[in-house]
Image 1 (cartoon, rainbow, N blue to C red):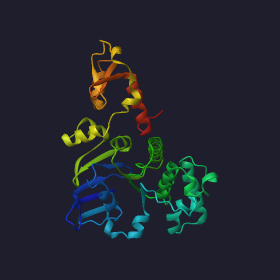
Image 2: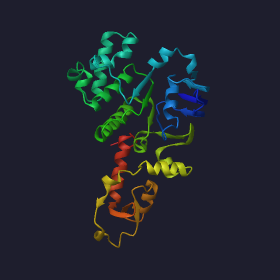
Image 3: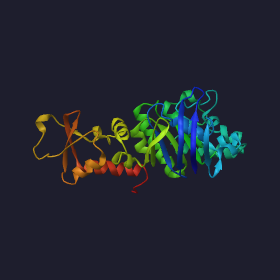
Image 4: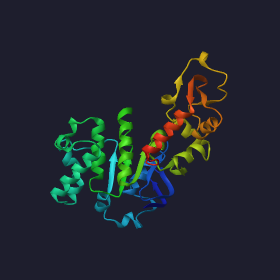
Length: 318
């Protein structure tokens, strides 16, 4: 679907943002770019719709060089969602969503039907929300409209640049769940930039971890967690709180509650595969954080959480 071949970006000051990138993103894939600040992830994203021109190499979409597309047609055919949202304050919600269909000269009835369809998709009743202005919506609702605007003309590709990072934790988690639900229904090719490893693990079919403009490791969330290729990946994944929601799962106890039969222990950053290995022999584990005992966790809790995560990702059916 999207292919980077020896793609590079150098700026006038000599800085290399992306260095000889070779990458294939599959049709219908939820693909996450992640890494420390300055690693090149946002530059890589913006190369796809030519917001940032390449210095060397090529990017193809559906077997055609992006330089061979008309720039307006290319961008109209790719949805784009930013952290800043950028809704037009003087326009209604329906008018904001309809921007690209209007530019593409869709029929008015077709546009109205599409706006209503999209609002229903995220649980916003059209009769209640289509005539509101952006300032009448919460931050989470505004970001939902930003996503719907990007989807309005039914693009095959959706680019998302840290779209939820400015939201409070509750709104962010709700938007992540909404996005997974939308993706199960419409199966777009999504390229998603984030700095949050928990978000990457929750959303991504594959994760591309970058450093200094290069790919350090590319694989499924479980591959990065279980088989880091080097210390950088191991530390990045560990530091970025791939903690499998331990705080939510741990039953807190004081040190006096530790029982001798709890012969095994894990920490909040223990990789999931190691936790599961412990549970092959123990029903109950002690949990430590920074060397301090904080409570226990039961095998059944982890299995239920795993099942819930798989359901949200559409990999387990009711």
